[in-house]
Length: 164
Length: 138
Image (tube, rainbow over all chains, first blue to last red):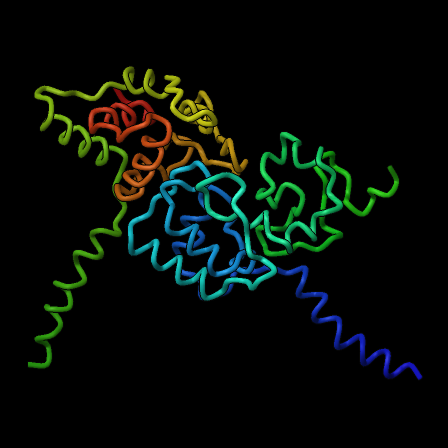
């Protein structure tokens, strides 16, 4: 009987699809894209836990070595949004250097998702930073992180990597 | 009687509308110049000084030693954030008409970038010179 399998597929598919999608929640204040997105991809809040976002937002004058200072009203609006939509324990970040906030590229989830990525890719001048999602996830700005959309810095699709 | 609230509403809303209304780069240049004159009698903005400031290597930040680190040597060209690689639209209003049309936005970026690259707040004179340079004024 095929029916139970089909049924199971319907249960699993929405979950699988969701893992490829990391959209910005619709209740984002306009300042979120305008401010965060001015210097880097406006990261989906689910990529870091609430504690991490609070740490990020309380030291914007030292934002991973960059000054990202905001007026207090804007800062508060963005922090509230990030905390409300934050991820859980799997995205509990760690700082890479002393005194900096936790990084969303140093969470257990991020590391697991990227463990197959060779070191030389991270060091590629076209990548610059592991937080440069769009370097490989070409549709990251639209919230889409599907595996088949990944194009490595050398121009090859991630799915072709086995041909090495 | 019924119409009474209307003028009150207008009075409340008018200042908001004014703040949203776009300024021009010339307005910003005028504002910074006036501020500079208050500190330094007889100040006149200089695009040449602005160009020198733009090209100067301050060396305060290892990754961003100069304006040109991210904005390239030509403010009419698009740049890239040296850490994140995010594209940056040209600074020159001739190439990007949005630039220097919002005082709060200009102040915010001078605030951040001066501290970071120059190592301190920029003076009103430096901002005036900078705007004179990127707008191609004298």
